[in-house]
Length: 293
Image (cartoon, rainbow, N blue to C red):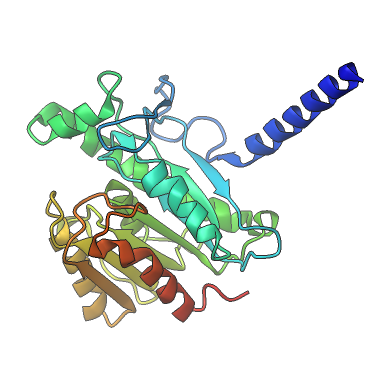
């Protein structure tokens, strides 16, 4: 009996491992274009100076799938792009945590690990902090940005191409991102094709200066933007400029500028006005018809 129980447990663990593995999708077949020579391995840190786990040294982009409970999916899909200054990904506060919350609303989520600049050591946050005054680190960040943006667009195209298999509506695929992830998400709203066009975009305290913002297309998707007035990195102006560009083009856009919340508030509760962004995003999604089956 003990032997049978032991092997039964092994079988359950094996099946669980297989199911978990199936929930992580490799974004490209083979090496990602433009970084074929990258050989380093992705790494993870549980406890960080940001008080949330981070992933770094991403060279092989993936999508982690978080699905609603059985019977609750409404067909809407969101690619979620965590931030981290292009040296790291705030994988919980701006990624998996957001995905779990959206899944309660019936949304199928795809947390994107996009390509990052290689950290100089075992703490990418040190590199990010130092990059504000280090031109070499800034150059590494800048070089990684086009690859990160390409990964965001590829993620949308992948979900749309495989919509039936993934159980989502190919006409209800959006992208959202935070800080550097907001660069990825916001950039998806410019220069898209039929394959990688987002059906909605949500840049949250995005790094997207006006010079990185392209022309607003005639069929530009609706946009939800949120930022805090006391953002320590000064990204309020990026959000306001993006909203103004959409508004001047007479395209659907909603902007929330919270009095307090700082930079990097993500999904965590801080007892600040910015805590309201997630529920207000859900209200916006409801109005857009994205939460209806």
